[in-house]
Length: 363
Image (cartoon, rainbow, N blue to C red):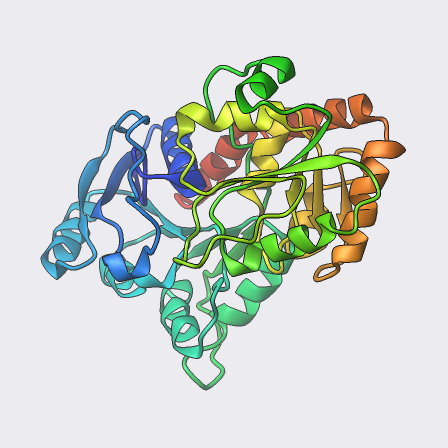
């Protein structure tokens, strides 16, 4: 069976490119990727390439600003029995919809159904893609519920989903990012850190709640350092300096990721919205527990042993959870539980699930 994947792969940055690269390896699939992912206006960080990453085995054909490449990719995809389109942003709605025309089996692997900065027109564009797919693979119950609503909605009037539309909910696999893992002591020596350390990691965008974490840090009763590491997605002013907070406001390349997670005792995810968290799944890879808000799919992977859940938009609750973690929790036990979670959400099992979907498509 010939399978193709359309999506970002290495050396593009961040978790979605990592996931596409690993999925292609698990399935032995061909990949059509991008030579330009976004108009620069829609990627307000720095470069979207991580030079520390190897170049994946893919055809880097698609250019968001060149429709000719969309038609070229569509013609190439005719040769495949099934195509997996990686979905994460509305920008690719029209090119994807064009490439789907005439294809027999289309699986949409959805990293998020909704938009992180919502708008009705973004929703309408995304629905064009959702309604065409034969299968939508999602990674949380809340995402499955939203997918069912979306495939039955056009621009403004209800419509039935196609007879073969299927929503498949499964887990998002662990993110095995970074290189060799240093010891906690080695990592802390590099950053000149000691004592209790929490990590806020990744692109800094409004929905991720860095402001909530900073408010919580002013209310802590324990002495702990908050290490903030990541690039500001929107070019906003740097947060105000405050005691016990360290900022490294830049893109953290793959070669440096392990040092940040190794230096931390716990990882924070105080998100306002989220489908499923690549940062939390990266934390599990490094055997680090997570303190997160109970939004989206986070309650499905954080079970009280591998982390703590708090209400969203509540800095006081976040501060209490951090104090509880550092003063009353068995940190070694929580680290073991985080490592167990990494094994449970394995790429081997995820690849088997996707293979079963592909095989069932031949019936």
